[in-house]
Length: 173
View 1 (cartoon, rainbow, N blue to C red):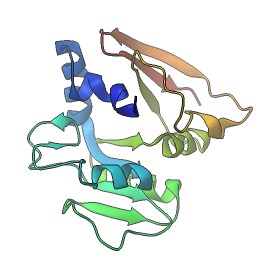
View 2 (tube, helix red, strand yellow):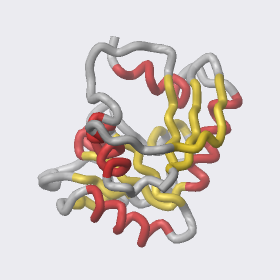
View 3 (tube, rainbow, N blue to C red):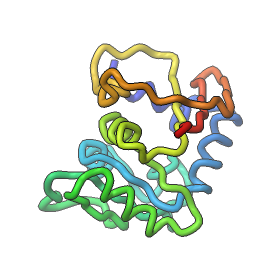
View 4 (cartoon, rainbow, N blue to C red):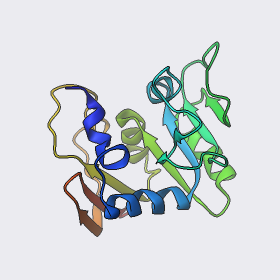
């Protein structure tokens, strides 16, 4: 089984509560940061389309700008959206996304390495973790970049559905 099951709450067997979690997140998004591996998936042949993109199946006519953390931009791409390839690292990508986000939030969509780097560098204000009821034996581990450090969190909310447990935390500085 591949990692697709972890997205079932957003793309498959979702409840009204799952839809609200996703709709609220998309509505608050002013800009999105993602890693190159995730970009390669969404830009790939089975990735995003005119109907399926950021936030799942919804109107994709006015998506937020995307900032892709990469060592080198792709030579070609399939998607024509507002993608900026940032070669200066996660901090630069977040800084550029903040400038573009206006009053909206900067969402660090992933993958796990980019999320970890943001938390480890003190760039995250809030964590929204969506835990699917499936165990995967591979992939990039979440929070590997913290090493032996700790990041204190304040629990804000928990929403449980059959497809996911949605955890919301504020990062305490």
